[in-house]
Image 1: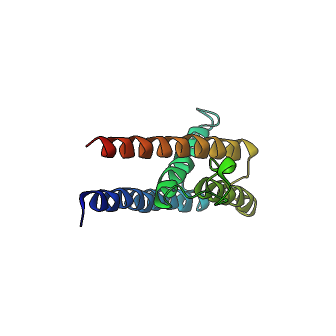
Image 2: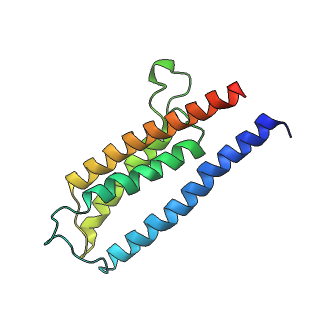
Length: 142
């Protein structure tokens, strides 16, 4: 195994393991919320959940984008190379999850929550690509 092949395998492991661990955390939080077991801090701090939407959903996009090797949504369309598959998947699933909340007595759908999800996806996907570009540049120098 060459050095670059080994480094590529380590990079893929970082993205995949990170995605698995983070999905486990987000799934656990979601289950607790759907069971109505999350403490209600809204009286003390209104809209306290918005930063959580931005970060937790954004980090899913961060790791999924890397795990999918930053695959473009439309391969062969260089002008649309900035539009990648993972962020579109995560935003779509976040939208579906917001709609599903209508069926829960403990949750309520919110366009503001979805907006924070989307901002988090854009921010963290950009960050993931930037990190990978820097890692590739560093690899090229050594």
